[in-house]
Length: 211
Figure 1 (cartoon, one colour):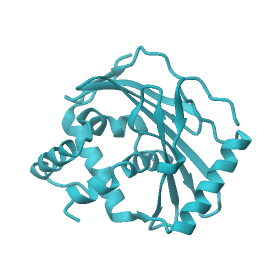
Figure 2: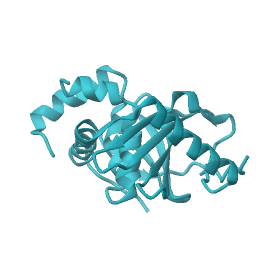
Figure 3: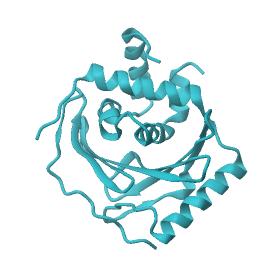
Figure 4: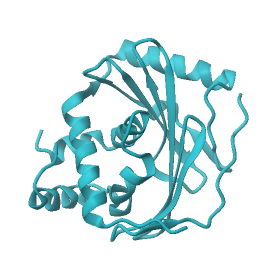
């Protein structure tokens, strides 16, 4: 079944996500980052965290970003690189104050200069597999979904136009920005999925916000 949206809706939602990251999340300290990454690594090794890496892809822990929300929740974003994937492909792990973990995995694969396929899993379960393009149209993708890898505050639209141009100028594909809300959803752990994706572009987002 086809799924569709328009560029205004997808883009406005991405702007909202970006604003949330900019206003409510700060980079973790070096020690907090190391601790969070160690926690995640242990859960991956145990098989408690499931990932779906395509052939040739891997988790690039050295490029991981860790942010802490005003609520105290920690969000870990580990890039997924290789296998034909492009930024912001990542495994995103939300660590609650009680230590409970929830995961979101997002994979972006470009199919042309203006389009690509976005696939996401929430807590290890397939959530979306969509083809997206620069005009914000999305349809169900007909490409193969990777299988599980074994263990071992809105701004005016004129502001958005400037913001999206800034993102584009810094290498953030329009097809990614337009589809983030759809691929991650906008409730509960899904919001952290989108925040985790935005972590990839944290510096760009801050600059485009005029921070």
